[in-house]
Length: 247
Image 1 (spheres, one colour):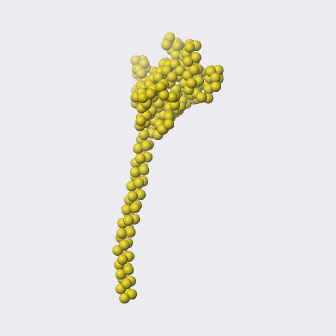
Image 2 (cartoon, rainbow, N blue to C red):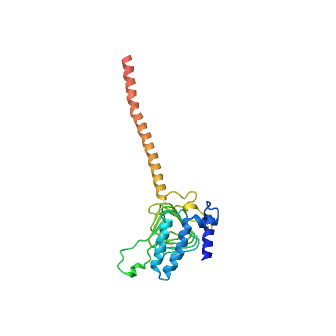
Image 3 (cartoon, one colour):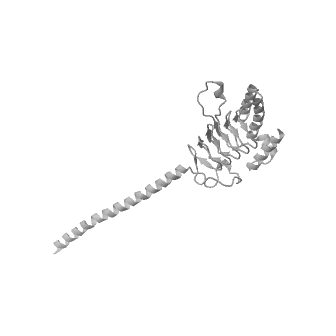
């Protein structure tokens, strides 16, 4: 238990530049508190103390504004930064060194429950090691987010995410060129690094808008040229009439 606590504190110190000391983290970080509550409630859940486990998880929710179902499986080094509004469902599974920001939902998508067997079906996502999920993102259903993948802020993920890939948007899509070969690269806050912020669909739309604008300008130029050509003969005829009168 104390080993897990030490690892959780160390992971927060490593990933949060605002953390000044382990004592500060242990005393003031609601994300750390919620994980500690979950360690206890999950142990009770596994040993069939279901009501007591749920009671502790609800107490944790009241105190931290973070809801983690006691049935969820959480690895080492989970960092819930800021934390407010985070929800982790019953059959969710998180690997080691996962990072979640405020407002993240690891939710379940399932049909209506008619029997106890359906209650035990996998309904929530699996996040592999070193995954980062940005603030307000929704990861829904029994999907897998691959190792070292990133989910951009406010994205909605409903399909599998490959390893070392950044996804953004609604629904979430892989950013062009986001696949990274080096899984040991530097931690990226909020799951976004350098030029990975733009939704690929938005990039395509921006390109189409630029093309339409350039075509519109070209059409205007051609219309002006055509108008000048039409005026040319008329001006010439007027000059001829003027010359005839002069004579």
